[in-house]
Image (cartoon, rainbow, N blue to C red; front, side):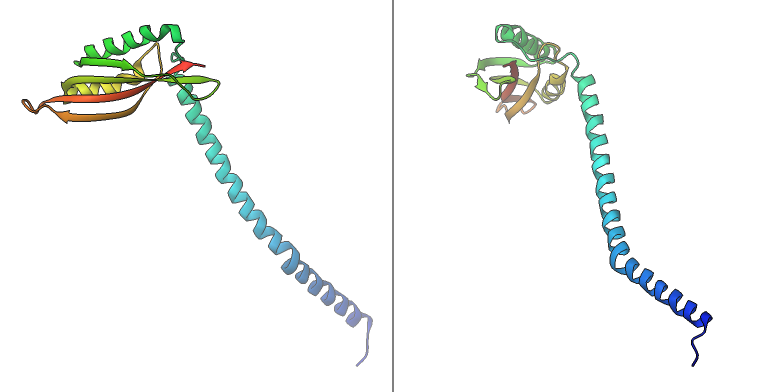
Length: 167
């Protein structure tokens, strides 16, 4: 068997092809697989970031008028809270501010315990309107609802709300 110039070139091209195939299989292909996985992770992270940005912008527009209450303005904010409740049909039996809880350097929480009487509709309306308060930021910490013994359409409720105060 003679080694002609054509056969040498063919053998060299075959060796180059085998070397390229080896490089592809052992180096390039595993890197491509890793790259695809990282790309998927980046897309997922990007979607989460876009969702978070959207949520923050919605929160900013919804809470634009909201602010932390200064300790001296608590009575004004509580007055607004009770006026809103009375306009919705809530009868306040007692309102008891609890000791202020320091959460962080930015804000404090003033728990307010309330005992109320109302109908189902008034209760739902009142709880739904807490985010409409203009002078304060209030969240519901806990509540306990029981029907009155004499009239099942009337409710007694023990409600604990958090009013956020400036730190």
